[in-house]
Length: 46
Image 1 (spheres, rainbow, N blue to C red):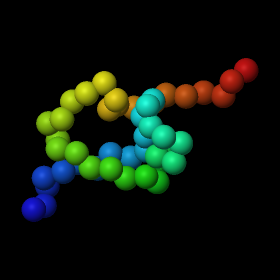
Image 2 (tube, one colour; image 1 turned 135 degrees about the horizontal axis):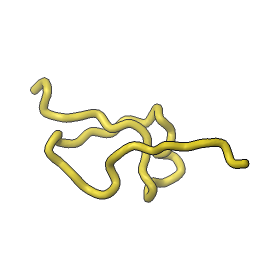
Image 3 (cartoon, helix red, strand yellow; image 1 turned 90 degrees about the vertical axis):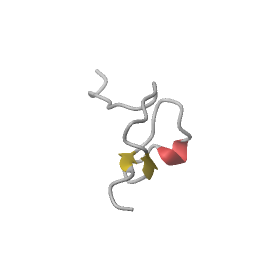
Image 4 (tube, rainbow, N blue to C red; image 1 turned 180 degrees about the vertical axis):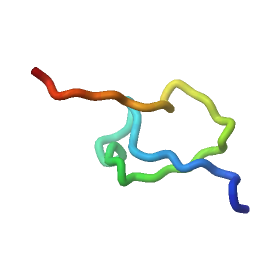
């Protein structure tokens, strides 16, 4: 069924190393909310 899932890319703060790449794809229902979903902002360390 088209449109049932949303694509999640990359990993979260508790992911295993192999799941952190942006090329990793996961799926979940659009209404699912939890503390591991969101986006990250980063900058180079000084």
